[in-house]
Amino acid sequence: MLRYIKHNMSEIVGIEIFPIISLVIFVLFFVVMLWRMYKMTKKETDIYSQIPLLEDDEILDTNDTKN
Image 1: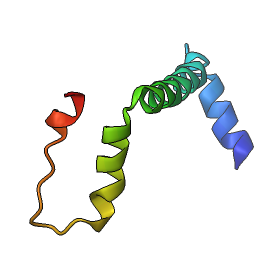
Image 2: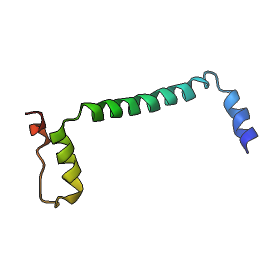
Image 3: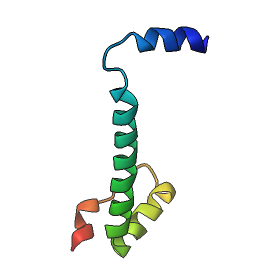
Image 4: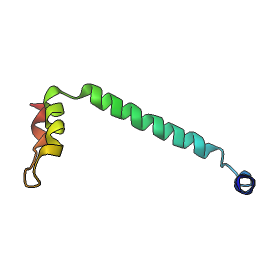
């Protein structure tokens, strides 16, 4: 089965760039998430930690976290 897929994929011109693009997207996503967590304030962390415990009718105002 793998030979069939490998044979068909090798005939496509420019296919070798797609694994590189997906790796770059994957790494960038996690770098951005780590940077976002590093820059997060204590107040934001407290708000996000309470989300699973809140009732459906409670609304969070996350725009106030920067004050």
